[in-house]
Length: 339
Image (cartoon, rainbow, N blue to C red):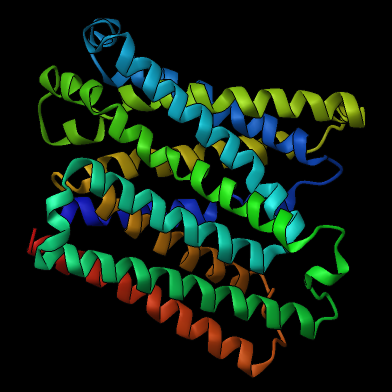
C-alpha cells in the first residue's frame, strides 16, 4: 500500500510539472509543441518501454484477445479527444474556470466509474464512504484553487469572465463536460486493459514487476490517444502554416521532448500505484493523482512568480484549496485501510 500511495503521489508531481517547460518554448505554435510531445509521450516511450519491460509482449496481446485490445484502444482514443479538447475548454472558459470544471469532472468520473465497474458493493462499506467523501473534498479543493486563480487574474486586469468571450455558457458547459468525461477515459482504459496486465504479471517477477505489468496496457491505450493528437495537429499545421516553424533552431525540441518524458514517467508511476493498491487501485490512485496534480501545478505557479503581488484573498483561497487537496490524499490512504 505504501509503495502504491508513494508512486501515485510522485506521479501527480510529474503530472503537475510536465507542462512547465512550455514556459521556455518560444516562436512555436501550440501544435508545434504538442505534436513533438505526443510523439514522445504517446508513441516512442510507451512502445519502447513495453517491448523492453514485458517479455513475450505479442503473445500477451494475442492471448488477451481482439475484444480487450479494441476496447482498450478505443478508450485511449476517447482520452486523446478529451486531452485535445481540454485546451479548447481552457480557451472558452478561461484558465481558472476551465480547470475547475474539467478537472472536477475528471476527478469524479475517473475514480467513480472504475469503482462501480470493479467493486460496486464497496460503496456501502466504511472505506467506500470515505472514498466518496474524498472525491467531494478533491472537487472542493479544485474549486478553491480555481477561484483563487480567477481573483489573481482579475487583480492583474486579465479577467477571464465569460462575458468577454464569444461563447455562450451552454457551449462552454458542453465542451468542458465532454472534455472532462473523455479525459477520464485514461483511467477507464486501464480497467479495460486489466486482462492484458494480468497476463503480463504471469511473465514477471521481482519487486519491480508492479512497475512493469501495466506498460503492456499503456502501449495500446496511448497509441489510441495519439490518433486524435496527430489528426488535430496536422489540421492546425495546414490551417496555420505552422509546420515551417520547426526550422527555428532553438532549444524548443529539447523542452518538448522533456515534457514527453515527464508525462510518461507520470503515467508509468500511476500504473504502478494502481497495481499496488488492490482491487480498487484505479480509483484510489486516480484520486491521489488528481489531487497532487492540481496542488503541484499551483505550487509551480507560485515558484515561477505567477502569484507575486496577488491579493491576500486569492492567496488565502489557494492555501485553503491546497490544504483540502492534501486532506483528500490522507482520506484516500485511510479509506484503503477499510477496504
